[in-house]
Amino acid sequence: MQLVEEPDAFSRALDRARDAGASIGLVPTMGALHAGHRSLIERAVAARDHVAVSIFVNPLQFDRREDLDRYPRTLDADVSLCADAGVSTVFAPRAAAMFPADSATSVSVAGISARWEGASRPGHFDGVTTVVAKLFALAGPCAAYFGEKDFQQLAVVRRMATDLFLPVTIIGCPTVREPDGLALSSRNAHLSADERLAARVLWRALVAGRDAVASKEDRPGAVADTMAAVIGTEPLARLDYAAAVDAEDFTVPRSLDAARELRLLVAAVVGAVRLIDNCDARVPSVAAPRRAGRGDRSRSARAALRRDAEGSGD
Amino acid sequence: MQLVEEPDAFSRALDRARDAGASIGLVPTMGALHAGHRSLIERAVAARDHVAVSIFVNPLQFDRREDLDRYPRTLDADVSLCADAGVSTVFAPRAAAMFPADSATSVSVAGISARWEGASRPGHFDGVTTVVAKLFALAGPCAAYFGEKDFQQLAVVRRMATDLFLPVTIIGCPTVREPDGLALSSRNAHLSADERLAARVLWRALVAGRDAVASKEDRPGAVADTMAAVIGTEPLARLDYAAAVDAEDFTVPRSLDAARELRLLVAAVVGAVRLIDNCDARVPSVAAPRRAGRGDRSRSARAALRRDAEGSGD
Image 1 (cartoon, rainbow over the protein chains, first blue to last red):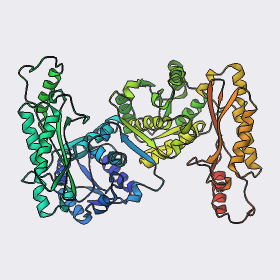
Image 2 (cartoon, rainbow over the protein chains, first blue to last red; image 1 turned 90 degrees about the vertical axis):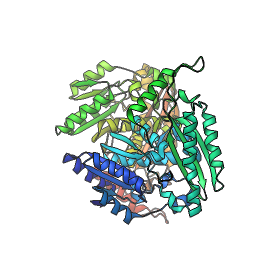
Image 3 (cartoon, one colour; image 1 turned 45 degrees about the vertical axis):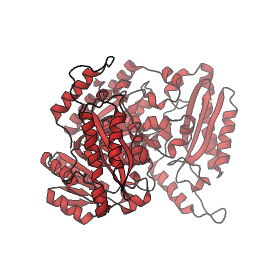
Image 4 (cartoon, chains in turn yellow, orange; image 1 turned 30 degrees about the horizontal axis):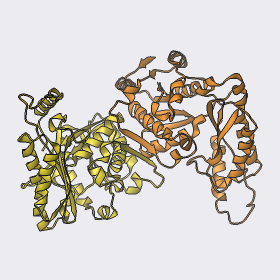
C-alpha cells in the first residue's frame, strides 16, 4: 500500500493502475475510520482491483470552526486499517494542496442542498460537492463508495455526478450500527457514557417512524411528529429535525405513497454532539385506493416493486 | 467525420479514440463558425490526433432571452467547415440532453466571474463554467482550445480547470481580426453596413490604450479614460466598459507596472449589437525607478521578460 500526499501523485498512481488494466474503487473519507468506513472499504476491495481511500478533513464543509477543530484525527490508525483491509492507495493531502489560496471554484447542487442538513449547516453541501468533485477529477473513471449514514450527502453527490456527466459510479452502502442500533459515526467518540446511552434515541425514533408507516399512516407530518415525540422523551437529546421525505430530492411528499421512494430522517444534539441518522420505510402495498382522486398509485406500486427487487438499505 | 448528438455517444467516441492511442483536442463552440473558430480548429488539428468540436448554444450563459433567440445558428455550414478542417467528431447535443429538467448542479468561479463581463451579464460565467465542466467531463483528458477574443472567459475556464484538478490543458489562441482590426465574432452578422464601420472603434480604442501604456502612462484609470474617449467619438457606439486589468484575476492594479501581466478590455453596444474586444499591452521596460517606494519593480520586469519569451497574443 502506498500513502500519497500530493494531488498530482495521487492522480498518477491511479492512472498507472488503470493503464495496467485495474478497475478503480474510491472511498472518500474524513478519516477517524471506524467499522462503518471499513465496511465501505471491504465492499470496494471485493469489487474493484485497485482501491484508494482519501482521508481529508475538508474545512469547506464545516459551518462551525470549533466543530472542525475538534473533529477526530487518527491518521496512523487509519493507515493501518486501510493496509489491513487491502487498500492499494491512501491519499491524505494537506488542506493547502486541496484548496490553494487562489482557489475560487465551487460546485453546488440547487434544491436538495438547501434542505435538512443543508438548512441546519449553511454551506455544508457546497463544501462536500466541491471537494468531492476535486477528488473525482483526480481519481478519474471509478466506482465511489459512500455510506447511507449520510443519506442526503449520498443523494447530493449522486445528483452532482449525474448532472456533470462524471465517469463515476456512485455506490451507496448500508449504515453499520452498534448492537443497540446507534449508527457508527466518528462523532460518537465525543459522547460521554450517559450521552452514549441517550444517543440510542435516534434509532428508536426511526423505528417508531417506520412502524407508523407500516401501520398505514400516510401523512408525512404525522410520521415526523411520531419520531420527534420519541426524541422528546430523552432529556439529554435536543431535536433538530425529524422528517419523512422523498429519497431522491428530499422534499416532503403530499402523502407517503406519493413518494417515489421514502426515507425517514432524524437529527438531534445529544450533549454537545450533533448526530444524524436515517432509514428506509416501506409504504404497505396497496390492495385498493383508500380514497378517491389519488392519481399516483401505480407509480407508487412500481416503486415498491423496485425496492423489493433491489433489497433495502440498513 | 462523425456527428453525434447524445452525450454518452460523444464520451464513448472519444474513449475509443483515446484507447487506440490518439491524443484528444476539444474546441468548445456555440456554432455559427467563422474564421476565428477555424483558426482554433486548425491549431487543434495540427497538435492532436483526434479533434472534437462541440456546437451548443448554451442557454445558461445568456442573461437575456432575446439574445439567446437571435444568436445565429448555422449547423449545416458548421459541420461542413469542421469536415473540411480535419475534425474527427462534431458533438451537437440538444439542450435537454445537456440540461435535463432535474439538472441542479452548477460550477462557479468566485471573484473574476463577478467583474466586467460578469457584472454586465449576471450569471453569464456560471453558465459558461457549468457547461464547460460538463463538456470536459464528457471529453476526458484532452487539450481544449479557447479564443483570446473572450479573454475573461479564457481566464475563468483556466481557473476552473486548475481548481477542480481537471485533466484538461487549456490553450488560449490569438484573436482573428478583419483587415480593419474588428475582431471576428458570430455577433458581427447582426451589424448593418453603417454599424459594421462604426464597430472598428473598439479596436481603435484598444490601440489607443496600448499606445498610452507604451508612452509610460502607468495609471490604469487614465488608460481606461483614453479608450473610453475613443469609443465616445463614434455616434453609433455606446460604451459599456473600458479597463486596464491584471490578465489573471481581472482586478485593476494600483499601477500598471504592478500588474503581473496586463490586459486592456473594451465592451460597447454598436447599434443593437454588444461587442467586446481586448489586447495585451506591454509596460515599457524600466531603466530606473521613477519614484521611490515601489517594491514590485523586479516582479514586473520578470513578467515582461516572460511575455517576451512566450510571444504575445493578438
